[in-house]
Length: 461
Image (tube, rainbow, N blue to C red; front, side):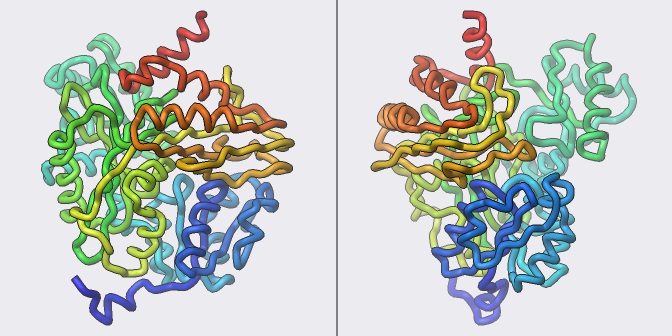
């Protein structure tokens, strides 16, 4: 569908403020520059030496090191955008990326928010309304009601018995693995409800909870989508993010091994239909649990994902550039028939943390050697002499590989990890090297609980 003159002018901008830090700030800056756009980088006082600040067209310190006074300070970010003449704001992931109020404030300031509308973020950010929207669109969901749990203990117990134990209690506004509790049987139900309500109230500002069936051996499967403002939407294949520690992803891969195309394709098309139904714009990720050949929707992330590179390498689509072009008002330049996923990709999250205790490690990087070669990509913002701050997430780099087959990609990752050296701080590289030597992982015989069990066995040995 060709653009009308009105559509082609809508949302156009030539300068993007990147409202984030670290590797994702560097990644977004690279995409902007390749599109011929100017960039405004922001920083806290702790990030004044960030290397992407030197290559940005403007670099503005917006506040102290604490995130509440810098990267979560909406007024400071909007002021920086106005001072630098930015026409759009890219939130990256984390921080304000899924904050509906911020998206609304950006648009009200006359700027373009590079992401979904505030209403889409609000709908999908609340897990209850998201589940309701997905059920309406025909997306398969985990068994359980699409309403918040009532206050009455007897009614709650009836709901749990109807679902069948074990169940999982989740905060409606939760995310990042917080605000959830597994209940194996009725004896523990009411205590779990009370504890999770209080946790949800403190962490997310709302005590609203919902309940679902707890699947005991599922895999975590994601479907990446991108949609424009012209009723076009596509899904770009699927990922397996089952390698998790404390609900936090450690290794991701695309595609998910062992899932036949005729099983995944209807789910991908249902995700696209759901996006069209709610008028979704931009990139997004549908997260599912997969068990015994069935998919169950758990949530949608209305932002760019940390693990987007594995989908970029298998689909051949630059997701960040596509996201920016959609925000400019362009029509998607690919249809579903154009999407073909080739080969296999893995991503390892390299964190500044002790490889045994996983406690964060701050300090100066005294030596850095990164692998290179065909099928190897490193997304990072660090360099020798870089000071890793104790104030932020421990992610310092993402090591991504791509090869024709899963086995070849695993071999390539082993070699890439062997060639990665970071000194001066502790990292999880030794842990990742050991994981890629594990036989069950190599065979694809893992679920979301596997890594925790693997770690317990290692500690006991």
